[in-house]
View 1 (cartoon, rainbow, N blue to C red):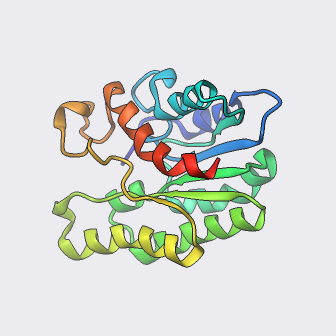
View 2: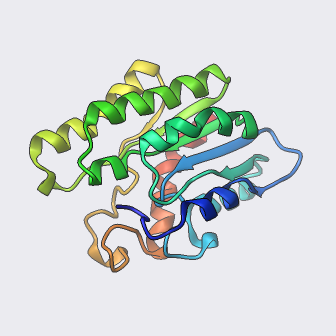
Length: 205
């Protein structure tokens, strides 16, 4: 699974610390798994920190907090969303979960229900939601991969929240951009991940 070797407790402790603190327009909370936790590379090379730098460069005064945990599933995310929202009070939450559900072959309906719970809780708390989609490789079978990808589109339509269709777009088909596990992107790929998120996030700011 993604980031299975990284201790979740360590990641949880780190996630409580904002990446960029100032008198800001609000907090952007990244709520994901190892793909957002900069697994296997330096934190400063990850797309979340690169997003913080882009915000600062563009004069957008937001606090960025990263509550991503390597190995996290949608179920784990749903179980801690209430406490995380209460702690961070984000203006915007970027939900990047589901990849580990897919890699484990967990039921798509279960993942969709968990992500729906996260979205509902976030909207109820007054946060804008940006949902980040994921795709599974073809060896999981056409029926599963189609249902998995479509779940994110369904949630985006149902809750009227913006969607990044595929976090790894323009990266997934380039083996050289992945670490040895062939699951986690190299540092060179992180700016591409940021661009995939940024083009949907920017209109929300």
